[in-house]
Length: 245
Ligand SMILES: Nc1ncnc2c1ncn2[C@@H]1O[C@H](COP(=O)(O)OP(=O)(O)OP(=O)(O)O)[C@@H](O)[C@H]1O
Image (cartoon, rainbow, N blue to C red; front, side, top):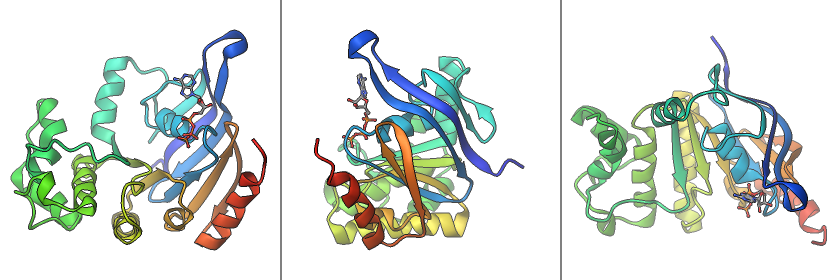
């Protein structure tokens, strides 16, 4: 069995051509082992979101290779890539992106239903229980706290049992206590169920929940820390914050 959830080999992503061209990712090679939690950090514009999008098959690299559990993504047709994304990767963003008129369980099942699938009620209840919302299945977003709304978004991302869960600042809109609850939930999914998580964050406390923190600068991996606390991560961030723009 392939123990790499994602493998990126010499991945570059350039936008535009000629003098105005921007290299968002520059020859990045990385492995994300299954069952691990990785945080991706770096200054604004360093390529974090681009890395996440290329790893998840949401964006296509200009060159290089990306495999998801052994499947090469860069050569897949748009249709196959869409199907693969729908089934094998999950996303949570800073914005919860819930439909206000739908209940928690309807929000969780909406993407699957749009794709022509109807998950069993048992599965929907199971995933809502997993995120601590077993009693809130019939509530609408306005009847839920911010943290609970993000848990609905998490349940929606997890319902297909994705190979990888990607988060782009998933706790960015939450107060610090609620954010920590969501991060503890993510950590528990890695430890308890072997979920693979890749999360972009600007917050050293959020990054400290990960097994490994990758640092990007100018589209390249500039270093990494394993098992680091928030203080150590913040000290590393201070080295690039000190560089004048
Ligand atoms: N569609 C695009 N067209 C042109 N340039 C782009 C495009 N998308 C991203 N870029 C550029 O690529 C670089 C990396 O962007 P990216 O959004 O990946 O950075 P980031 O580290 O996630 O930034 P932030 O922390 O501010 O969200 C930036 O210089 C950005 O301006």
